[in-house]
Length: 553
Image (cartoon, rainbow, N blue to C red; front, side, top):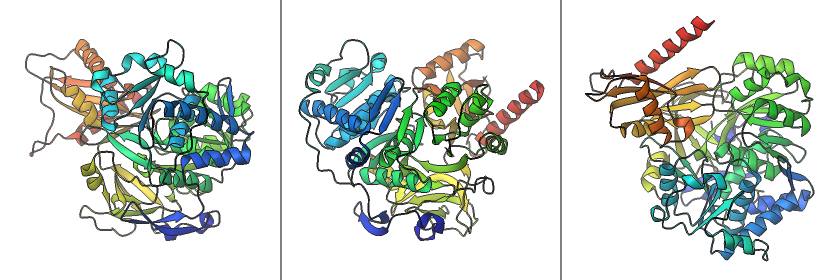
């Protein structure tokens, strides 16, 4: 569906659009009236609504004026230490106010933020910090033990520790100059990279997607327009701020709107509901499993949740039973499915208002400036309703992958990003995602490429061959299951499974570690060409899981 065929009810809300030449060889429909950078988004919010609450985290509260000042102070400290436009500033910070301050401090200088998952282990951190050439790392104090050695990341000149404990090497410069005069605002071009988000790929090595100021602004505007968000709205960030959903769908979207964002360090249903009632939350964006956990929490009915009007979700379909139960508990809550990726700077589609029940098997329709096509393996567009790979184009699609022109060329054609998802687009423009072309597991919204887990398993001396597949889970959607074929001389045992799990835990983020194993001295099933039969293995796991559920019931 082309941008020109976006439903008319969204056009009425949208600002004027025009075609623009971007990134050298792309022509994209863009919002004509838009902020030109992340800093301009924050400056505008502070100018219009300086006294309004911007961020809440525990007992901490910052107004927009205070957030702007805090970012300016941190930017001054960064500038004093030599951070300049284009430099990479890595953020190993969980869900806390300092993450947002650091994001906008870097943007003020024209530096590039590189958010990293606090669940990442030392090998992954080493690769990403070295690959992006970060000059400054802001990290939580308790994560100091996971940091790579100085020799392994020679470009990393400064490490600033956030939180209790002694200052890490290099932090004293920031501490002494944080109250220095404000650093001047850099002249940023909106097509410049604002953030690098690492996303796993089929090679097992993460790729650094380059999100531009232009792309982040457009995605923030897309969310605001599709959901009619404004300065009176309030949300809870219960997903990681270091991921594209937390970074763009929540943080920058609510700065664009000058709304309030309450930050949760970790999702707990009872605490989420308490905050939703106390802070008069109007908006949420979570995976369906989180809504279900809220519904089954015994405190649900004890809070006034009447202000909650938008319930956005993504990563998995919303079960019909959950939709019905939410409608009974919160009749004013409008559920809206969203679909996107890191490479699309979050949203590509959103469910039109009021259409969730009628089109629950879809992820909605393409947004204002988005062009989506379904293509065959030869790169030819397919007719409506025909299954193929979804390609996505628009000003929010990343310009490419950091220091990886081969991946850029392989994944982006004429501005269209190849999603790797198989799906259809019907005559009305509703997008259905049917399957994953790339072998990926979605564990409660956390995307896991199996090749990365398999590469870790292959490093264990007992592993001859392995295959990682999704194991169905009623709460998280999918969990990680590993089939392992052993080398001669090794025997399957519970102790070996524990050893394999610990081996993976030392190399991977915790959500990527296999939670169950099928270990055998027998070869894994393969077809005549020698290819592992993953579909057969997935079916075997699904059947076993189904039998366990039946026995319990």
